[in-house]
Image 1 (cartoon, rainbow, N blue to C red):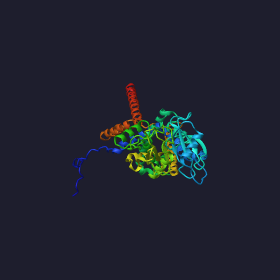
Image 2: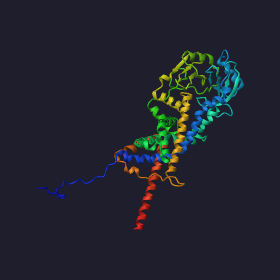
Image 3: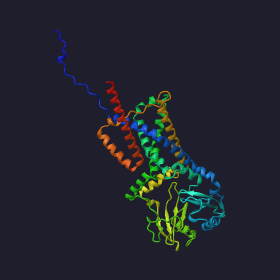
Length: 466
């Protein structure tokens, strides 16, 4: 006897099929992709300028040594003359202005620099550097100098071009805008690329857009950490974000201290104001002041700043930005030649040290030539990434047109428990980094308006068709 087949009514009821739930990453990826795409298109021209000028600046250190070799180097002699004699020779050749600082010859074949402020024809924030042979006291030339790094005309021109395109304070907004967005674009690119790790083998070895994407992603992944570093350190001395960072450091008690040039000492007070008194031979004189600083362990290179007035002391400070960093400073009483205050770099607050090292690494000073070569490679990588990015956009299109922009509305798919905290973090970042927050808010506003216009047009067309 055979068993009859069961009827459908005998089967257990089957649960209704449910649509698969999207992971959090699946909802976030379109939003990050859209941000990376549009930020890249809008910010890339500014980043391209910053990368090109940064590449020039990294090379300017070596170019400066070649162009100004006559002023910077001398044949090595038997014995260096006292600093006071070298300054006297500089003043005889250039009696204009006042002595604001003196940098004795730091190496056997290097000249001594005597910096003069208030010289007619020299910009107010620049000095005239007079180069003196330390063995013969012969003046080998004079050049305009800018900043504490001792940048001469060639490097100064490139530095200002990189910083503000020679447009003054208004021009500085371009570099701050680029620095504010570089870390966002780099971070977004890394996240997008790592999410494709399962498809990397398919990307490699292909042609067309996928090959360009492979080059763009691989180079971007290797260079991302460097871009984030350049972005963070570039913002530390920017106009708006830099001011916010400075206020935060002050609130945390992490500002950079200064040696006191007052008669009583107590570092952290007032440093001498660039030799306002203009008398480099004031009191005991430069030679005894330098001897007192040497006794406190201040090795070359050093800079001697004359007293600002009759109530102030000499300030001698190390000016080596390389590794290991030498930034110790002392104040010396002009009447007695005694040290009245000492400030060691080792005693700097942690954030002050990190800021010093970060800026010097950003500008190529911390590790010398290897540092400068690394910056050149980062600049070259950024240039290539921008060109590949635009090429991918072109390859997505058809004929002679760029590809269609990524669709809007991706944020609507993000769960509220992720979207709300993300918006809060973005708001905080936008407050401290205004040239990130303001453009992002403007983009969102424009995007919402355009989306609403498109939505209304679509409803009107549907109604007319009906």
